Image 1 (tube, rainbow, N blue to C red):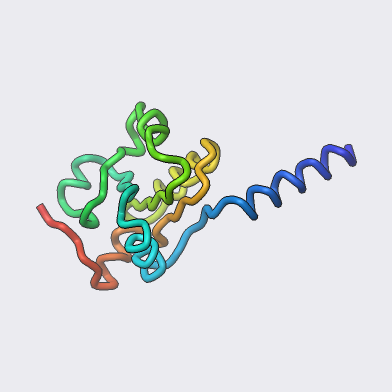
Image 2 (tube, rainbow, N blue to C red):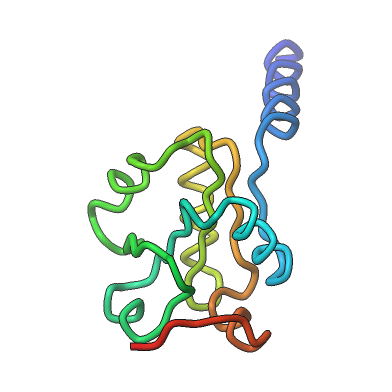
Length: 126
């Protein structure tokens, strides 16, 4: 039992040190978007929601789609992934899937595109 606990602590610390998976503010998300050149900006809303409005340059991978995990796995695990949804629940779940799949850097937009829009950040409309 003691050995299992020590192993779990070591693995947890390893992932905390070598991976960056977290929910961040609108301003921090924008900084990370600029730093990563938006290469892996992912909107996990439905295609209908995505068509109405989105962050410029985002790719739509529908969290509710049966192929979601397969589509996420196509992304580069060594490059930052920036994820958002409408308000947060789907992107939090998507972030956890990315963690399970071994992505090294994943940022989730706190408050989703609603918070982004309220902050006056750029949004593409249909």
